[in-house]
Amino acid sequence: MEPINIALEPLRALLVEVGAFLPKLMVAAAVAVAGWLLAKALRFALVKALRSMNFHVLTERAGMDAFLQMGGARADTTALLGLLVFWLTIVAALVLACNSLGLAHVTELLGRIALFVPRVMLGVVILAFGAYFANFVDGTVTAYLRTVGIDEAALLGRLAKYAVMLFVILIALDQLEIGGDIIRLSFLIILGGIVFALALAFGLGGRESAARLLDHWMPREGGDKSARTAQK
Image (cartoon, rainbow, N blue to C red; front, side):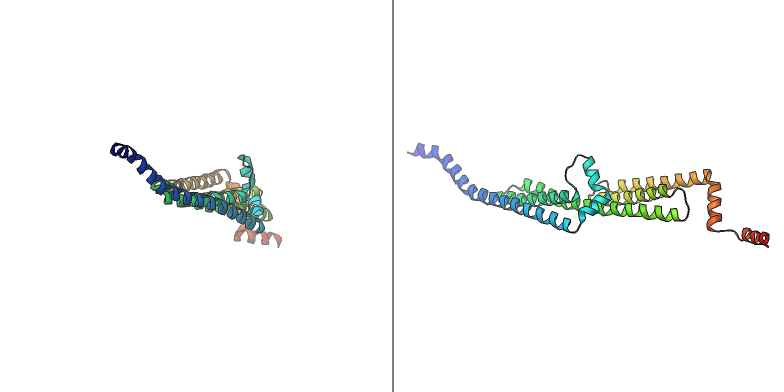
């Protein structure tokens, strides 16, 4: 009997471990299923709330929905945010499930993903409002410059729009912690180069136009006196 007991000892130890592991596995499965149901409910609620606030209209006017469709996505920005909330909830449920199973490394990895998803959502919201504001700046600058009689109103409006979009993209990347100081320095260098190039081109090739604009905006006193003298 003793040799048989010795031979069955590993099997008994295995059965004890399985018996201790099964309740944890059932709890983890229950947490995962509950997280999946909660994720679907939160996704539906968020999409419904955003559409009731006409957030999809804002992203459509901002051009983000068209950009996603150009990339092959069938969903709009509102549906994308709902999908991100869905996966955030799923990942949070998996973190709890893996933690109950004692999987420390998997829990740490999923925890990092769970912390990154809200940043992605915030970056998407920043891009949506920033693109809408950039289009507003484009229309406002173009309309104002046309009223003062500048022929290059559309070009200057586009430049203002692109400048705003570059700033918004920089803020979104900063939220995602992508690039850091390299992105900021590159942005400042590119912006400084564009401003210097425009100033140089305007100074060398548009001196006459600049003189006419200055005379139009700030007429000289001598010119006014000579004009009044000629009228007399």
